[in-house]
Image 1 (tube, one colour):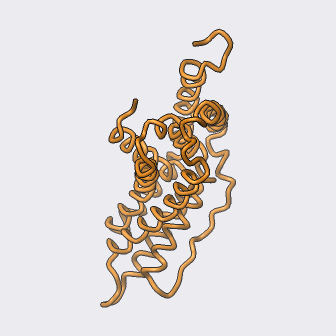
Image 2 (tube, rainbow, N blue to C red):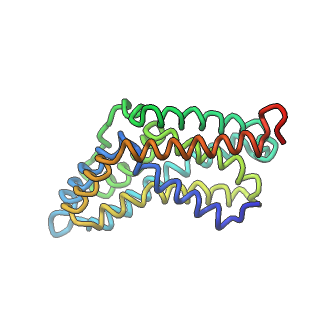
Length: 231
């Protein structure tokens, strides 16, 4: 049984990798840096660090909604649903991984939409984070599928619904961590990092695809024994 602490760390790392390997999310980072600079100008404007924290709070709010839907839909039947959900989740994971290996930018066709803004910087920052969390899911289906695939394995071992929600929050913290980092970094450094991520986007996605295929095949063959003659 996976310990709670190890599972939470795993979910955080999966969340951290999710936006950094999402081809259609990376273009949002330069505009996010520019927004932070413009929103924090003036004597009474909130600091960029505070705006970054509010963005992370928005991401966590979105992930909380997803986690609540997960727990409400499955309820106490999480453990009973493992035999059905896990093979399906890892089969989808294998397909997504194969697509990333063959066409690393195959999921980049999703349109990049600018998150909404308002005249209130703090509200805009929170809304930006909530919106960012929503668009990460279709932009990087590989790691999202890996998260839900691992969730079907790990969550039944958790002792309470609170631990399940902590798992989703750890994943959300990982997604929001790069945004917080960009908020506290200088504008020029932030732009250099986004250019670097964009430059190496294809090999990173291909590497992620290989990992997804290996993980999914391992679970399908050695854990769930979906092939005849396997145990």
